[in-house]
Image (tube, rainbow, N blue to C red; front, side, top):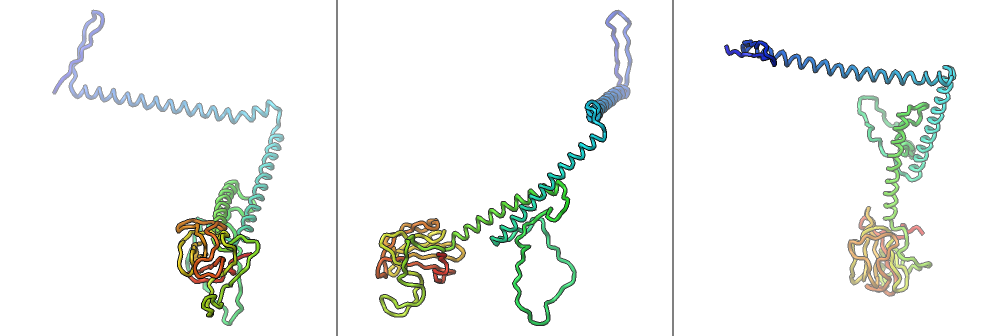
Length: 330
């Protein structure tokens, strides 16, 4: 077995000493040294943790004693302190009640707005319809009168605390967050509804103070052939050069000329609605233009099959000409 010799040499002239150690003994000493180092580090760390916990307990004890010391220094009795706490609690309860009332008013206001505008509330994101076994019913045996049901619940926004007498602060915070999100959705719905209304051709294609129809929608005697023929729009008398105004928001889908309409423009308003403006002297709008209600797209003329200056105006629904007067609101 391999051996190791350890020599101890003093600084003075003392006697030297030596020890013979086997590999086993040397390994044992190294292991003991490592173990002692680990145990020492472990207990030192435990000491630091215990010291930190002791300091935390001391600070908490000081905080707990502070109100009592303050009460003693100010001369406030236990009964007086309880009275103050009761007043503070009552003030908080009053504020909660006021906040609850305001949230209720906000909910009712949103419900009224949705009812007046016909905009149903959104289904709560966390709602779930469960399908299971249960009773099923049928209709009445005999004929009944047709009943129109207006479901007001469709207009009521989702809620958390409506109907609760004493909701917690957490529930009121949830209600505030829900009201904010619901009102933002209502604003977006109203913007979409406003855009939809802007795309309905509800005005005249000119801003003349007085208007005279030289021909109406429906069957008439053709001014050229004198035969009975369906007239697909309105002929609105106007002076040459008068601006022709688009009657609703949309996109120009055609701008060109042919022998019948002369210079004419078609505007696509979406949802199956289109308008046509014909016999113009000059076309301003070109294909692909986005146009707003009341914007000029050309000028009045008498191009194509026309007997004089006027605006020929048509409204198409799903590709079929309909009476423009059914859309004009004034």
